[in-house]
Length: 155
Image (cartoon, rainbow, N blue to C red):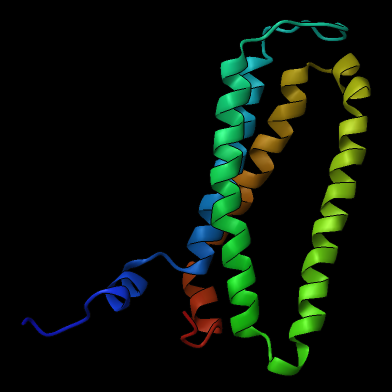
């Protein structure tokens, strides 16, 4: 039998780091919004109704779900690994508080869609949510070596 890592040990060693998974998840999120931006490009600014193919929504949901699967389980796992044992409950509370704040911000921004689509196009609205996550995803990937060093070997 060859020496070295086998089975689950090999899988752990070959899997991307947390920062890479976060970056990939954010890029997938941005790509989902890019599809929505492209799909809404033909809608006239300020129009009250529009007809767009369902494939844009299906592809956006697919990419958003894949991005979420790169972010949430990894974040929860590393939260429990990196936080001192006496603070785990508190930090999980902070994690879910951050999700609640994000949901509130998403609702507020979604409520501004009429104002934005009157001044700009609906495509511009979705383009904002394309560029920001992709930029942060690239930053996460670029900072991967620094983040790995700060994690002191936690996998």
